[in-house]
Image (cartoon, rainbow, N blue to C red):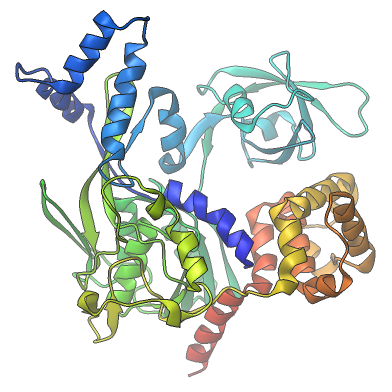
Length: 534
């Protein structure tokens, strides 16, 4: 992918990386009790002094939160305080479900557009369709008022069994259509897609490690094996982590019993070791794991376990480098602390955590950008290995610790000024906006395709659509440059088609098309095809 796109992703990876354990509230109660002893307590004493003697009234609870945040911020880059009002939102993605109405939406030109409805969900059941615009929620106007994503989500979400009235505009219908929707449990998925891109070769795109990841992977492997899968591409690119136990369970599907998966250890935590403990569903077929600088924590545990046990070939670029384990302690007021309690180590003994000075720092947060500047994304030769952090896999292969998983086959990003046009339309959101509007205008025609396979065979980005897009981009401030457009035409057309397919068929339509021009994915296919033929 182009450089600018990688930089956009980097911020999200840094914020999202987490290996989480969950502890009960009893532990937090004992923590609070220990703070109530008679010994000198500078934090509570200072807060009390401020409360009783400060010149103006103060929000003591807010000050207490600041104090906790300050303490955690100075420990390491990943310990954090989660306010009560943010708790559900922060943890929702890892729980495998939430309560809501079951729609995917996006906001364009101050209007909330329904991209897709969740199959079998509350919105689909009452008749809401892709392409509908939400104008009002419970009588409150949300169109044309510059509503934010979070505001809309809070209005649509709610406890299962509660009702919400949604008024939508639909093309061809003169008046708004009112729907009374009963909220219900909406599943969220860790696996974006699993399919067979080539006879004998399966592909699984795993985007996070949640409470449902293990069962989702089991279902995917069973389905792929029934279709004749002998070899597997496991795509962990952009996967910023999740639950430690889920990473262990995923690794267990690919490793024979008693193989070491990972171990953790901290100053106040004894060494805990995780071994493969059962018959996995795919313990013998060849595996390629795809990683990049956005693969972190739990994703690195899986990649490290399979690499150190010589079970998989790792292809891509050096992973993020997050080897710290957090425990989540929920407090009585609904807030929570994620405290780093241990480091994790791969089977060969590697710590994957990249260096950091105590606490959060600008150097740590800009480390991915520094890799780019050093040329690490372009050439493996720019990566400096420390011989003191050299380790050996079970089969005798040399690997390195000290900051991420290094792939066995390095795939550079392309640095070419001819990608300037492509970068501009992508990073400014122009390509996504055009494909969404195109889908919306032509939905009646596009719905004539029987299914994704029919769409994929027959629909093409022809010269008329491409010219329409170039003119659209020009109106959005991206100048027409025919040479650079021609240089990226194949990739641009393919991504355009993939985005239209996503608007119609979700990720099951996006990835089979998008991956056709993905060089890392194509390299993985080549590696496995050769092994199949051998």
